[in-house]
Length: 162
Image 1 (cartoon, rainbow, N blue to C red):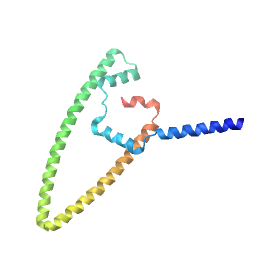
Image 2: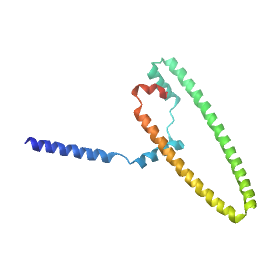
Image 3: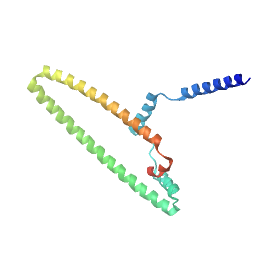
Image 4: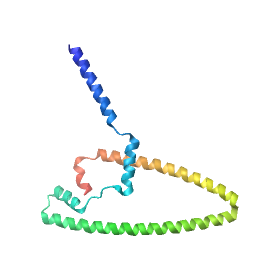
């Protein structure tokens, strides 16, 4: 009788392990989630939520909490303004770069001829494709490193994220 009970228990454990293994999402699905997260679709924590976390962590009074909310609102407004300025600079730099590249390509085409320039463009496109592949691999490695780091964080490091 004990043998049958042990056999049934072992079968149930194996069955439950098989079910648990099937619940896990494939790694490519998890990577897709992180890509969406990095495209600006993430939830930004509000100044009130940040102040609430700070109040809980530091046991703040209502007036201190209100001061923290005010501080975080000013900080968010400043960050928003800085992001807009950076985006404007980025667009200007991109326009300048594209104009310079077009000029450089025209000069090179005159110097080496259209046929050789076409071959050069094919080589350049291949090189850029290889670079993008390497960069994608490095980004995946970085995301995996970050994921591992978050899994190993201790519970008493909650106040660092305020």
